Image (tube, rainbow, N blue to C red; front, side, top):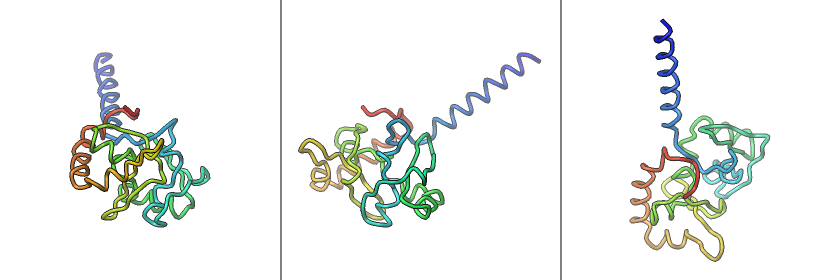
Length: 156
């Protein structure tokens, strides 16, 4: 009986770990997704907007901030629609270097109803590089993200 209980507890723990492991890894620092930027604003308002902790939502180990309750409700109803590609990591780095790299939330592109975020610091704007070779980079980023999707949350 004791061995059966121990086995059941181990299996339950494994299933919980496995289920958590299947959650996509998002671009978070100290639990906050992309510096508190509202992911809904990209598609609804056409701009990057700083969210408010008053309208917070937690998902997959990340806390999302929104500019309003309406934006939060849209996200909660369909997070896959509003979440930028590659978990919010730099699209260019995912495609060109197979790496997760931080982004500047104000450097983004919307294409086909999807949002792509980019690194833009220290005289380097990867959106420009992305635009020069978008088809190849997007294809590579899609492939690479499949491997990274369930990897650790820490950038390389």
